[in-house]
Image (cartoon, rainbow, N blue to C red; front, side):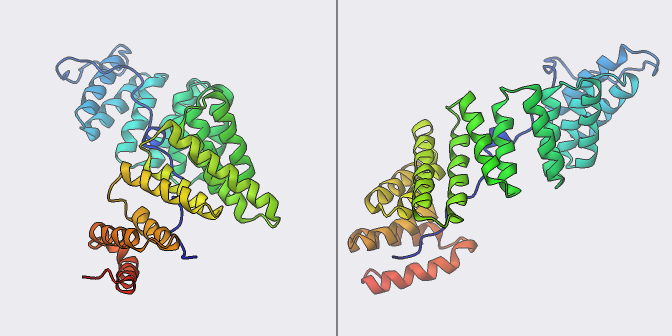
Length: 314
C-alpha cells in the first residue's frame, strides 16, 4: 500500500479563533473630536470610548488604543473600555498589554465571559498555555453554553497531550450544540491520536471507526468543508475502505478543485484500485496544481516518477 500524505492537523475555525467583537455597538456618525474635559469629568470617558470605536472601525488601531487608554484613565471601572482596549492591543500584537487589559475587565466583572474568552486566546497567543486552559475553564464555569470556548478548550487540551480530556470536552460541546463542524472535526482528530497509541487491535479499530464517524458528521453539517472530506478519506484508508476513501477525496476536490494533498492521495488510491487511467489523470492534475508551490517540490518529484512508471508522462 502506498503511503498517503497525513491528515489535516487540529485547528480552530476563523469564527472560533477570532476575538469577539467590540463590547458596545459602533457609533454610525462622523468621527468625534477628542474631548477637552478634565480627568475628573467622568462623562468624558464615554466620549473617548466612542472615539476609540470610530478609530477602530476605521482600522486606525494606534489612535483607537490612545482613545481607549484615555477612556479607562478617566473611568478606571469602565469594563467595556478595558475590553475594547484589549482588542485594540491584539491588532498591534501587544499580547502582554492585551492580557492586562482583559484582566482589568475581569477584575471589574468576574463573570464577564467575553473578556475571559478573549483573555484565554491572548494567553495562547503569548504561549502561556496553562493560563489559557485555566481561563477557558473559567469561561465554562461562567457561561456553560459558550460552545466555541469549549471547542477551543478541547483543542488546547489536545495540544497539551490531554487527549482523553480533549475528547470529553468536545463531547460536552457537541452535547450543547451538535451542529458545530469544528467540534466534530477536532473530535475525529482526537480519536485518531488516541488510536495511534492503542496497542489492542480491537480498541484501535473502535477508535478509528469513531474517528471516521466524527468526520462523517463534520461533512454532513458542512458539505463544502474540504478538510473534513480529506480527513474522512484518510480515516477510510486506515480502515482499508478503498472505494470510500476515493469517494471522499472526490468530494474534497468538489469543494476545492486544486487541493494538492487530496489529488496526491487520490492518485495513489486509484493506483491501488488498479485504475491506471484515473491515477494518471489525478497525477497530472496534482502536478498542474502544485508544481509552483515550494512546499510540494518533494512530492512533485514523486508524482513525476509515478507518471513515468505508468506511461503517462508527456
